Image: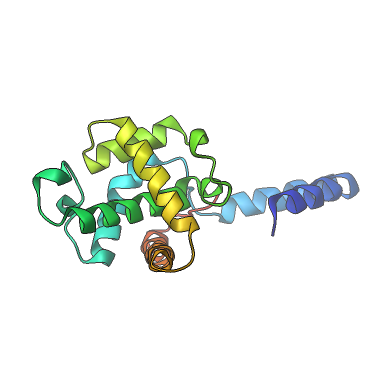
Length: 167
């Protein structure tokens, strides 16, 4: 359900029956899994799950890709990984495509886990990945389809660890 609708429903419930609203909130908090969206230390673990699902070693997409072969394929894998991270940690960015609003901490964690020297390189890669993902036709349709599939597989792997993606 849309966040604005849920907020309106919550405010209405709070006016009608504040005790029930409070009890419901406490129950939801007690039953929810720990949140992942602010736990950037889990990004290396997500990389491992991603690489396992892609059937590649993490070193395949880490470090300087220009010094190795298959640069195009490795770059596509990197962009897919970045999209998965954005879908988990900053899903609004995927739908609203507000490149400039990416949290610096997230960019820095992506940079570190992929072994990239420059934050600007990460920014360009994010921009490219978001562009590719937004084009849902022709050859680029495969990219967005892969991204959605890999995201769901990674999400499933994370949920097996009792972690809640959205919070």
